[in-house]
Length: 175
Length: 175
Image (cartoon, rainbow over all chains, first blue to last red; front, side):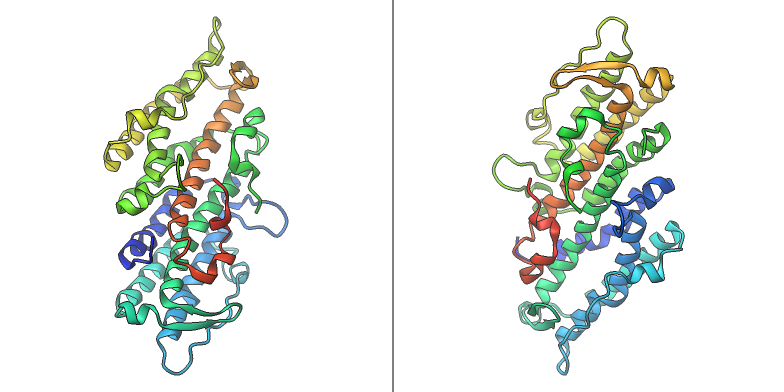
């Protein structure tokens, strides 16, 4: 599928509610279980998604549309440990809903057409990227973290499933 | 984590609402996109989850607790193509909510204690499995299919993300 704004908005606007339903009623065993040393729990992921919406996606979209400076700031993938580690999950889930709503308000205020979608910014690692690639990546990034949360939670039952482990691909996925 | 009924119920009872939020407002491009020939779309997965609740999980639990016959019937992983392929996604999501509610009503009616949880059934492929392993597997099976749906959807944007693909592990995961 090629990038399509409405198709992306379907995902981007639903992710906070998906996270609410996945995590809103869970015990700490699920919320804070991870995949081992220096890996992320579901709680960590929500902090990361908040920080990415606060500082990354729309900031980069504005850089791409800027006439003076289209170089992206690097993104700190670990900042949530400093900012959000000690916050209650419900506070984080609500905050994610709010920052996402604000991001999408900003996104809808941009005129997106073939010309603006093909404008480019400079990524610190791999150079030129277009606005449509940025918005597609934002969409896939949401799905990637839903994927991660389901995997991390499943692994908490790695031993409990016994011989069924051989049928459950999710338990064999690397980090 | 060892098997714990309440921890499992947190997942098993939330999955229908997670699926509603993930899929309830999506276009057909997301609902019916798959990973290639003979692979499953998100729509396929919901049919599979319905059929598994209708015929597999609690039926196997009852076999384990039966005093006369503890051999499981084989489970048909492809039956949804025959039963549910042509159904509207909203009908399937509602049906999944209903069959899950019924399954959990049945589950809650069983007396689960150390003794019943260690009772065994005979799986057609790998022989003896306990009730706690069955219930753990049911839980991980939900998470595995949330994982699959997020991966299948992400892959529809495989090309749209451009050079970001190298950072998005989900796009490189096999089926």
